[in-house]
Image (cartoon, rainbow over all chains, first blue to last red; front, side, top):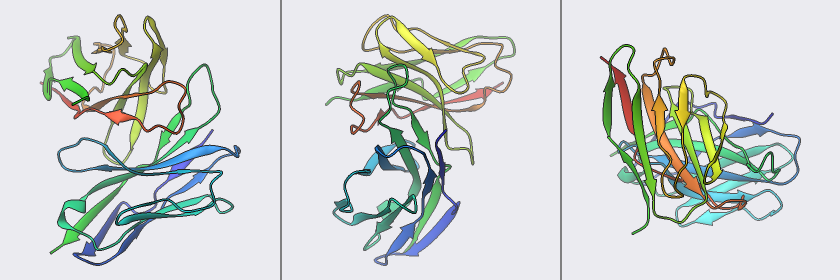
Length: 118
Length: 114
């Protein structure tokens, strides 16, 4: 079974600075997808960025980028030029490409609460 | 705009009572999911449905039931058998068999015990 670990329950960053949230996972599969979701205080989960395991190039979405280390099973999220609106819970998620009964299972980490200090 | 609507936002349950959480989507997604979120535990899958009139148990299905009579709707019933129902419940949907597509989430329902 896949597991996703976020070892930082809470992080803080000064506004305009850069912060990196860590995520590691365990799997025996070679093909899968990884996601970072953001959950602001309003509680709606929003996709931040996604990465396919077969792509070596790290995904980037504006101020958000990932450092994907497949051999190390690491998938960290870097937020550059942090803004007050970035304050939220961030969840790392793993989605299997294996179709188990018609369902590609999604496994979530326990989340990292990011505080942005003005 | 397409999206997922969950209602109510807050729900209170009395002892021995069943309550139903609503989830409606207009994204034309085949697959729908229910997750339970507790502090420090991330999201845990309760039930999922890949197609109308079919659904499967997730990791923590005991004390819950669902139905999928319409593509757009996937209500979750928290039964009296669920002894610890206080949690935040999230409904999600996605395109079926598209592993690269993310799940879209609703705003959630917070359920508390009276």
